[in-house]
Image (cartoon, rainbow, N blue to C red; front, side):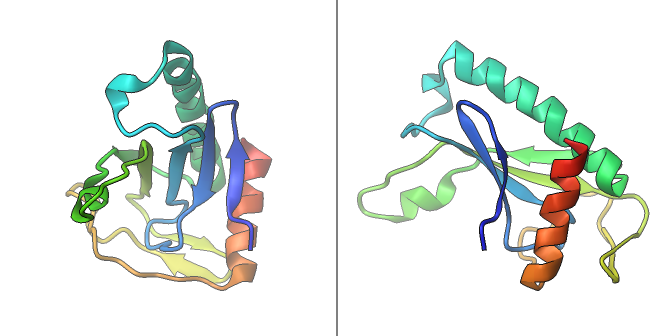
Length: 138
């Protein structure tokens, strides 16, 4: 399944496999780049517009309360020859339970740091519905 939600000139937004946090996705720089300090001004400005668009779409789609963003890239350095790629982890956070596609999503740690080791995999059908909903509201 194609998990691309949408893209800009410099970034692509992909739905994460783990949907414990409904709408969780990755924002990946299209060109090879391993350090935030090497982003161009155009890439940064494009990213800011993307943030506005994505947060607005998730609020409209699922009534998210707030968002957790992270640019970690730690895993790349587990390799002998690391090849980090600038990307962001985006986790919508919800004060209330959300029902979507016949499923209930509950952010049990709302107000705390997000849980890293979650593993809620959904059917391709539900994933497609999530992507369509976000695109519709973007």
